[in-house]
Image (cartoon, rainbow, N blue to C red; front, side, top):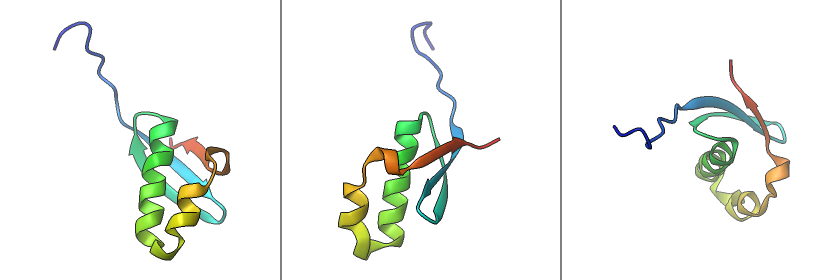
Length: 65
């Protein structure tokens, strides 16, 4: 691995939307929100369009210990 390549460690995040909390592993908060959307869309396919339209500020993201 060259010096220019940065090793990015996966971090665990809790992502909360409304009353639902999902745990995802990602490299950043933005990626955590993206992954949480994917999980929610799989779990709640009838709400796919609503989930996709949610603003990012509706997602509460906290890094897990």
